[in-house]
Image: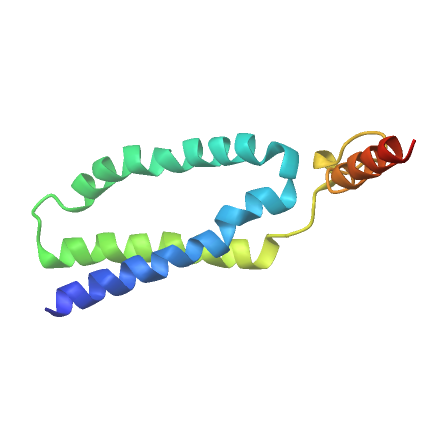
Length: 122
């Protein structure tokens, strides 16, 4: 029963990522968020490709001590990623993601609305 509690808590905590790095793609580059997310997910899938090979190399006998090493390595990688993200991540639109000519993506809907209002009044 304790295993179910741990799995449920782990999945709940895993859901917190959506309010963190997942929405950050949209924050830093609204016009390119899909492309950036695709690139990020492609790179992150490499861990899923490499991890079975690393795990089998670290657990040749399948002992509890070997598996503890795998879990500590996983925890270290996740903690390092969290710390780097917390220290260096930004929620500001990046300069390279801004439209050329001064119109940022956040300004376009307002200009379109103004044009529609002017059209209706004439």
